[in-house]
Length: 535
Image (cartoon, rainbow, N blue to C red; front, side):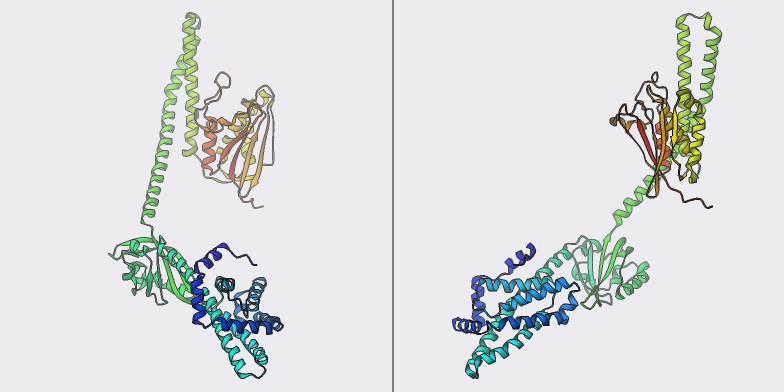
């Protein structure tokens, strides 16, 4: 037996007639014990001829226009032909029991689920009877009374059979319509159905919530009644597009029952008949007022945040710049005191002067780094196609003394062409390579700069054999002033990686680290790929 989807089985159970209804239907069509006896007689006499009749029907179904128009897939068409073959091979049976009724109900439900039309089923039934009745005529052997009885019983059996199948087909169709109707009515968007002239025939419950019209009030109105005066012309074009078989969706301005206008997202499609001809216009729409307000507030908030960031960066730049001169003066005079009175002061005084000089110099380093990080956003140059190899070359030149002192080996892949601010890219590479030189542990630094293409961007990496970083610190190291080691062990201000992150973010990329403690670290960042330079 063919396995059908559980949804269809559940539907069959819901519409299956009970024992009382089955008995009532047999009584209506006059199928009593006498008629069943006649059917049994025909069943026995036609047993040898039945296969040929069904085979003829099978061949006919392969040529029948109704099925070939529905199924382009040969395997599906073969399945339907086989189902009908099984159906009619069981037509003449004296067992008009529950199983017989169930098969007829199932046949109706399955045919509806395949979107076959009733005329196809009735046409195949007519073809079968056309081939069956001449056989019955021969069985009567000239006995007019017997022939009349055969025809009477076969007619009643056919009507009973057709009624079972068609009733199941209609029930399944009605169930499908009920589901569609529920979806239509409970849709959160307003939905109206109109004719090709734009006259509204039906509206769901959400129409009231969106427009203020009740579903009853909306019927008979033109779709233009829902549109603001400013969009009438545009809607005429939309309607013409849909009438021609097209579709439209987008933002427009609609009008409520009160006359208030509101922004709406609208989708307009055409409902087509079996021949593909547009018969109705379906309009779905929603009120996007809240969305637009939220969007506008978000834009305003983003603008305010950007302005605040610019002001903050400008403040940091100005403050750091203005602090430079007095701090230089403090550092200079403190150093002068140390040189001039070093031998004239006691040990405590010398120590105090040393602390003052050291503090002033560290403050200068912090201010310089603050200036550097503020300049990323305020003093950056436009991003444009450039050779990252040039930026790497400049970074290595700036670090040549540190490379020589540490005995480091620095290698690199062929560097790609990217979209960047060359000076900031130089600073980025210099900071990352500088960190690799600084945190090398006991071994001589081995540093490699690589580049791998990934879709429309390049992933650049700086790999070292240094002390590494534990995974729990991966996020923390990119935060300004965050240090994992004391300044006595590894000097610095804790701003370098924060500068790197800010530079990469300005370039629209991402930066991250891959490492294990004691096993070196690889810093990676992405940059947009640039088109190849014209030769």
